[in-house]
Length: 79
Image (cartoon, rainbow, N blue to C red; front, side, top):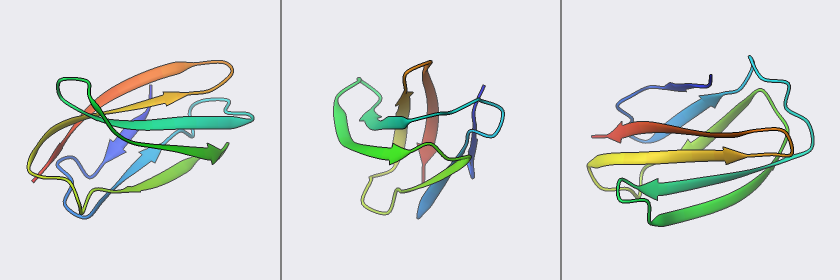
């Protein structure tokens, strides 16, 4: 499992991937609660990724992380 904090987010959210054995590139997608993609970025494998939420309106969102060996989605709130 991944950790997202702070939740609810204001300016940014940190995705903690330290429990996973992440290798290679990760595709990270932020989507609205209906699943419509808002932003997609490519990151090298790392234990933590910080994502800006400053341009997102108040509400529920989904972060999806894909790599060679996993696909994870987690909900978070922006206030």
